[in-house]
Image (cartoon, rainbow, N blue to C red):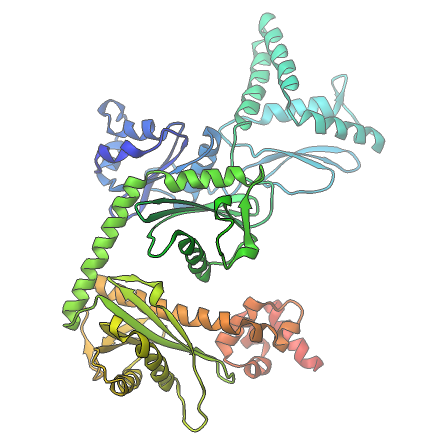
Length: 563
């Protein structure tokens, strides 16, 4: 059970809170008009009113909060997070992937119906989304009365011009202006005066829904673009980052990052975005605060600096969330730093040498191509330090066999020629052959740095750690093994992503890119699997379909037949 003291910095704004157990698993999701007040109630003995609450409190080890713009948005976000995480202590309903809209559509007549998603289309008006904690059936009945009837009867067999006039009327009605609601309020009062309470309840339900739905919200956007919105807040050289992911107009996910600023603020923003999108797909738009407009950002073609009424509320909310609850985030960050320091010390004991500064080497190339690169990835006190990452263009020596292992010699020689004084330990992505190539570089440079190897299994996952004689080093501590595995994954990722960035033009200019429907992502997948363009062209439909989809596989086969 956490201390109530941790709640003191939670904001008094509307939002969603997530209780987590000691493993970080979300066990309950709740919403609140006032986050701090609602979360504080869990520590008030008078408020504990069910059997599950004290049991849940015993399991709570940490929490996170998301600030939103209204109670309405909090409700929608709560439902989305419950559907996503299925927390143990929440009442679970069938998965809710969308919220409904009322659509008025003009065809040969006028139709009023419920749709699960918003779609921008000709001759259609949408109202929503409509949270299912409000009854929207009275509003639909009232719209039917206003738009589809005359003298209390449903209209039939009218010409298109009649429905066009009604559609124009619908456009005005569905603005639900102050004048519209005033007329509705008058009807409500008249019904009460003559004791028609059922009719009064009908009008009251409509007004309640309209007032609730007018609340600001950014859970849904009237845009089908994929949009990532980043909020940044810096304190004591620590950067707090909050990102919201909108996909097809819906808020799909949100995430927090807490990182140390090791160079400058401007460099941090650029490097963070580069690192983030080396592991994630680029959206249609990346939204940043306009205060970053004058810094150098590599992904500038994707950047939107928030200035318009559409983007400003999105970035404002992201900035609020980045700043939200920073004391707890700092506490978690320091715990993580302490943990990585302890793991690094354990590795030092296992290897019987100082492991504060580790460099890992790997290469990347494709058979049948001339482009070869080598990389060095650097870990300092258990964390990656991008200032000491390096990429080298390697040469192909036709007088030598130049196997993959020999490229490691070039990579290690290039790296250690400049940065040997910054290295305590060398780890190669490979076995004894790769280690021996690094030892040649060490001898040439007259260096004495311990070197080890990480060997993968048939699934390309870390299997064992070996010393410079090829003997296995037992790693019984799971935290240390996971640490080694993360480092091996990182050097492999950096090598492949660096190769793709450097050789993207050559890859995209290949004959494959001339085939309709075959994009750069498909080409990269095919090249990584088959190794050469020739092998791709010679592959059967079945072989191609295992790597890419059947449509692309068929297009490649047909292009080969047309050659």
